[in-house]
Length: 370
Image (tube, rainbow, N blue to C red; front, side, top):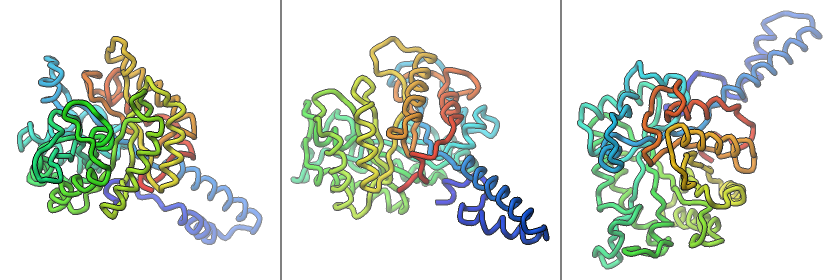
């Protein structure tokens, strides 16, 4: 998917040697001097390509309608200010691969606003993703049975409605991100919970996905699940997640393009994440991880929340056993209150820029899809 990943037209690693040798051949230099020069040129080219390797990084903020109506935040939102040519997040936007949003943007903003958002994402070569639930609560009987008020569930056909609005306004939907279907559709036992089998979950999601693919045939699907939660999360939860990815592949005929860890930071994440990474890689799957703040029960502010998130990605990225293939800078709470500018500590784009400023290690970084 060239449009999602390219930033500068660079030779692929396999082309570096040929290009350098041709340059050396054109220079009629004495053999030993030519040999040494070629070694220097090839080392420089390889080092430059490694340093330029793009990160697979996503950004997810809170759309204005949700900030005002869910979090009852009266302060003006600068979320939509991001989508103009002179918006002050140029450095981080240049390296961002995917921007993820929800129905709070797609359903609540005007056509004119959506057209501006989608046009700006295309101009910046940033792909569009939507996150949400594709479970409907309709049981095998064909009647509504459960799921009312449960996260990960939505009305039948609602994701198709989002896709239609995106298409109408010039957007190109690249990814659908499932909202923890195994956890909320199979495991949770609270009021209105369905506790369906993984096979039934996959079939129901596939039915909704087919509707979206009538509009966007190439849309890809990734899954998010909570990781490192205390009981009642089962001790073999990582194994259940991996088994779910196999069920999905068997039912749909395709793999998830990533499995994303929504880390419960109070839990034993230092033990769980390395195990999850190993198991996902053994299945040929991309290991994705959300970096956020909060979750510790303390009073939050914009600086505190973003500092917590930064501390987490510094710790995880330094450990090859935990570092993800795909990183997601995300908030679904009221902090931070501002997206912009990227130069101001405490904003979401500043947090993104901090992450992008980390050195890129040789481990844990693929092309975004295994």
